Amino acid sequence: MSALVLDGRTLAAKWETEIAQRVAALKNKSGGRSPVLATILVGDDPASVTYVRMKGNACRRVGMESLAVTLPSATTTEQLLARIEALNNDPNVHGILLQHPVPAQIHERKCFDAIALSKDVDGVTCLGFGRITMGEAAYGSATPKGTMRLLEHYGIALQGKHAVVVGRSPILGKPIAMMLLQANCTVTICHSKTPNLRTLVSQADIVVGAVGKPEFIKGDWIKAGAIVIDAGSHPNGRGDVELSAVVERAAAYTPVPGGVGPMTVNTLILQTVEAAEKTLS
Image (cartoon, rainbow, N blue to C red):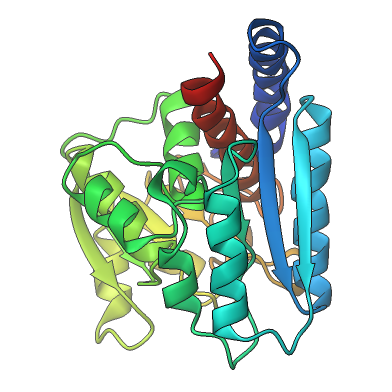
């Protein structure tokens, strides 16, 4: 029997309609003021340009505004920090996104952490991560939070399950591990240098591919009936998991593309609206 497809693309489109209704209601209450997401792009990396454009298009689809801040590749850490501080202090901006990666001369972590917690709608600050880890209020990192929303929508049982997260990045592997732990999973965090990785993955009820290497997690590592979350995105439509070998093996899986990716953008937009509702309602 084929696995259940956790269709993030269809779900995100459905939720965009609901978000648009919230935006319209917010505009009505606030005399026409719109939620605003500021996107900061440093340099002209083609992939980053595309991602920022996609996020701007998503804003417009729901009736929000996108403030595109484009800075040259030679921008310094101090110059970027000054621009972030200006956006923090702008009452018309409700969310701030700093597109990753930034040029090598910039201290990326320092710039992420300069974003005000109330505007950290992409969930990239250490403070936000710490609050999420402690079960306190903060905006979750967009990809992990979007994944959790996807699992909740499809009624995937998490309590008591053994989740194996393969990947330890600060905006994906680590935060989704903490979110799964908060959902009462038992969580094992692995990475590309973990010994006996195949054995650990084969024990998992839930496998999260967040390692950033195409088809690094082989299909025959997955035990029958497992839930497979593939958060990777690579050329030729490949993810971090060998999904072609999972379809007849897993209970459910996220496709690549069309699974986690659309939920990331949708969550970023949703959290910007939530931030705006706190100041405009």
